[in-house]
Image 1: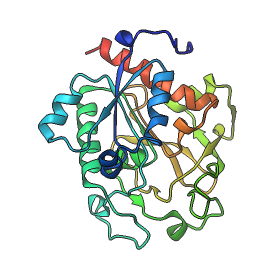
Image 2 (image 1 turned 90 degrees about the horizontal axis):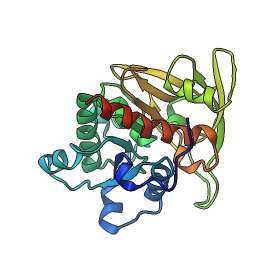
Image 3 (image 1 turned 90 degrees about the vertical axis):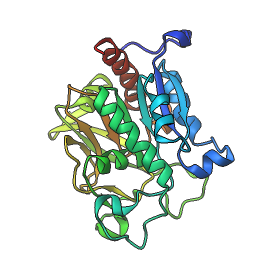
Image 4 (image 1 turned 180 degrees about the vertical axis):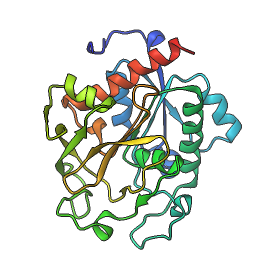
Length: 265
C-alpha cells in the first residue's frame, strides 16, 4: 500500500462517517477522544464526516446514503444486554440508546450496500451484537485471566496497557500484518496491541470469523466474509497507536476499500 498523500484534495477523498461516541459528548461538544478517529481517517487520505446520534431514522438514512464507508468508534458506555438476550451483570455500564440505534442503522446500511466498516472497541462489540452475537459483560468478573484488558485503576493520563495478540491467518487483518512486517508463527501473526475495554465478544455474530485472540483467549478482532466485504472489528484502539504500522494500515485499508467498493456500485 502506498502512503496517504497529505496534499490529496478533499474532493478526491472518500467520505467516512463517524458517529459521536456518546449522546453526552455530542450535547456538550466533547471531542478530545473523537479527534483521534478524525485524525486517523485524515492521515489515511479519507475525509471524516461526524454523524449525530440525535437524527431520526429518516434523517440518518439521508445522511449516510452518500457516504463511502464508516468507522464505529469506542465508547465509555456499554451495549444494553437485552440486545443479546442476557441478564445485566453488576459491572455493566449504562447504555446509550441513541448510539446503539445509530450504530445498528449504519451497519444495516453498510452491509446492504457493500460499504466498508472499521469497528473499534465498543464499535466491534456493536457489530457483533448487531449480527446476533453476544458479549462477556465484564472480563475481570467472568473470565480468569492475568491480562489487564481495561484501564480500571489507572490515572486518566496514564498510557493504555499493552499485551500481545495472535492474528489468525487467512483474513484481511492477516494480509495487513504481512504487509506491516509482523512476525508470523504458531498459526498466525504476533502483535502488541493497546487495550482499554472491560467487555468483549463471546458468541461470534452471523457471518463473522475470529481474526485475532489474546493469549488468554479473549477475542481481539473479528472480520466479515474475508475478501468479499471489508468489515473489520478490532477490540484495541489503532487510532491511539501513533507510529504503529498495523494501526496505520487498518485505516489505509478502510479508505482503499471504500474506493474499491464505490467502483463496483
